[in-house]
Amino acid sequence: MRELEELRKEIDELDKKLLDILNRRAQIVLQIRDWKIKNNYPTFDPSREKELLDRLVKENKGPLDKDAVIGIFKTIISYLRSLEKEIEVLYLGPEGSFTHQAAVKFFGEGSKFKPLLLVEDIFKSLEEGAEYAVVPIENSLEGTVGSTMDLLAITTKKVIGEVYLDVKHSLISFEDSIDKIRKVYSHPQALAQCKKWLRQNLPNVEEIPTSSTSFAAKLVKEERGSAAIASNFAANIFGLNILAENIQDFWNNKTRFLVLGREIPKPTGKDKTSIIFSVKHQAGALYRALRPLHDFGLNMTLIQSRPVPAKPFEYRFFVDFQGHIEDEKVSCALEKIKEECIDFKVLGSYPEANDF
Ligand SMILES: C=C(O[C@@H]1C=C(C(=O)O)C=C[C@H]1O)C(=O)O
Image 1 (spheres, helix red, strand yellow):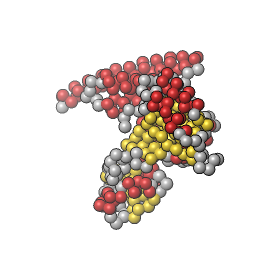
Image 2 (cartoon, rainbow, N blue to C red; image 1 turned 90 degrees about the vertical axis):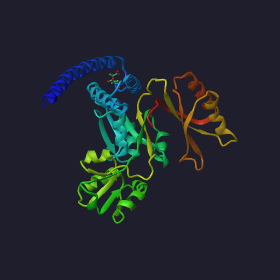
Image 3 (tube, rainbow, N blue to C red; image 1 turned 30 degrees about the vertical axis):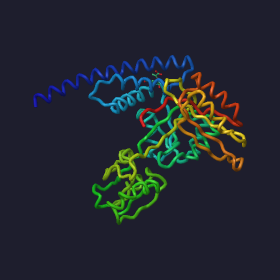
Image 4 (tube, rainbow, N blue to C red; image 1 turned 180 degrees about the horizontal axis):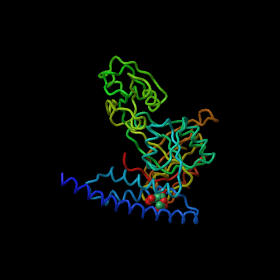
């Protein structure tokens, strides 16, 4: 017992030092705030945060692992950043959704988050002055999210970041045992993704579709004998028990989200650029528009066509590739691409997420 007391005393002393260091860091953040106001510089600087986290991960000697270092420092940065200015982040809700989880992963827990129920509402709010938002763009099983792409085509905002998230489903409930479950609520996609598990473990339950996994979580909070298929993140938010984890039939299910804001962040040396364009109906037009990526050695990571609503059977193309618009190779390639296009827009350049 004596030993425990001594060890805890040591922890208390370290915590005191940590608190002191954190407050010293906060004071410097406040000085940076004053500099930013004077120089009209944005509060949130995703490139700087990415560089800082990458460096800490490299310098980390353990026993903390990489995720712990990132999680702890993201939280510290976000709470201190709020001292500079509290930024509000819109996300595709409701509360507890995978997009909510992605937003917290990108901005850190100390930020302020606001759910909106439609991607259309998010883009509208951004045009009306909201500063930041997180929207889903592609899923590794389902492909791209058309509604997000169509709104990106007309937004005046910029893509300032990307986040990848493992989409893992859990069975969550107010009940404490799987034997008490008679009804399972979830989004049809999630019910479909957990079909095998449901057949094996809950063959006789009623499956009820909902508009989202997090709405299902909200519903089951009020109803005995029911469970939702949703994330552990949603279980946490709604105070529900996790009855089974990782129940999805496909293990490698990931979603990529885009972060929207006002200003394109500075290059970090490992960035991505998103563009959108349309080409003439001519033989080889798309080939000529894409050729500069090859000529300048730029690696394309996504290409998707979407119909142009005002022009039946005309298409626009979304392309992501590695590099930043301030890189010389990228700016030269973009000049050449532009020459081949009818409409052309840079959606943004942003630090590449390296954790998928
Ligand atoms: C303190 C700053 O402001 C924000 C907070 C950061 C931090 O706490 O390290 C880093 C980048 C910015 O998003 C800064 O720009 O350096």
